[in-house]
Length: 259
Image (cartoon, rainbow, N blue to C red; front, side):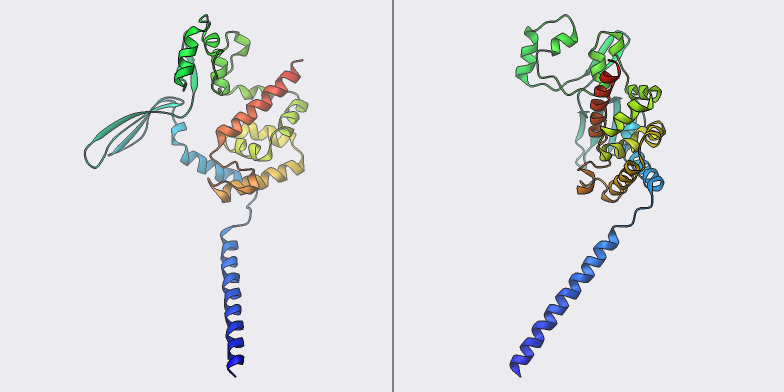
């Protein structure tokens, strides 16, 4: 009898454990909703990005302010963070979100992070131009706008919206750009580059690619700002990475087109 009771108790525990595990698994599945379609997912992602990136709403000026904190934007990558702690101690910090160069009239300004050795090394270089000064060191990985500022030839100077040149390209070149971009990169670009890029994507992509990108938009949305194995580790807020990929592909296709 005792042996029978032990056996019964064991199976009861096993059944309880399996039942508990099943309930847990079921609740986890409920947390991940079904896709609501390309249009809905993209619209929702754009709204989320717009709410999150308050630093992009204005080119300069006060971005955020409350009784204890103030953020002022001086340039696209340069900010001042000011505030007061509970103890009454005040702080004022210069915050840079990355290396950048900008040109206004005949003056170039910006922020570059260099090691002390590199800073001393550039003093002994060619000082004819900023480009020649920086050529002797491990220069930062510039965004396209900063890279364009360094160029002295007018044809090489491009703005942050220079990607829009593809709007006038023949379909074959637009298709080449999209073929060379990862679906996860396209998904992030769709969120941040707006309707013009979306029109290029819709007019020059196969139905299969559209379906894949639609899934990427869904995974971006349900994963939030966490890395997702479904989207090759790009999150909604990694626009800078997506833009660098885009600029690299654009440069490669541009050189082929201009031959």
